[in-house]
Length: 302
Image: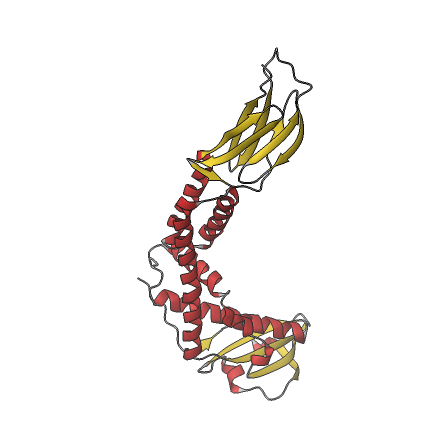
């Protein structure tokens, strides 16, 4: 397994134009050693160029966040939380993308701002060949091994919640009570599957397929039908299934007066346009997943 180590000295090397091709027009003061060396123990050092001072500052601050996230991702990988095969570069990249995406959402990062910067330095430069002027902004941001450990712990907690949520959805599968619950689980599991690149991905995708399969077991069952009034339920196997979704209702002869949904659904209709010498019906249909659940209720004129 490839191990990625993280030290308290964080270094960001930005591609810069050689100083010989740039003329310094203005600075915020004497250039500090940390800005010259781009390294300081216990700190993240970043630099960024932009047309305005404000934009250069914001870009440098964004690089701080990206560097912290990268540090967490490397810590997670080196701790063996994710098994990354060294021989499969594509899988390695997917793992790192997945970890980086989740690490960027932990609460710690929300507190990173200009106010947290310990030192900053800027200079206004002119490129000698293009004559273009721009600002270069340097940030010295405190970030220790202890802070990395705290952030790593937050990441693990957020990741644990994902695992727990998958387990919860799996335990709820045999207890589904409504169509909306199935819909929500399918959507949530789809989102989780796309965000995972570890052993949970396959499990989550399979669980989503099992929820989708429930649509195939849903039936529409008549409870009572008297002339002008239909009562029915949706069932999942032998169990009743709730829904707040209204069905599509049509008839060649009857005029649909009212449709009510609930534990037991009802349809009121007028039948004065129906005749006993032909087969008359009210058709009720639902679109559930990729399946149409359709039932025809014969109008009892005969």
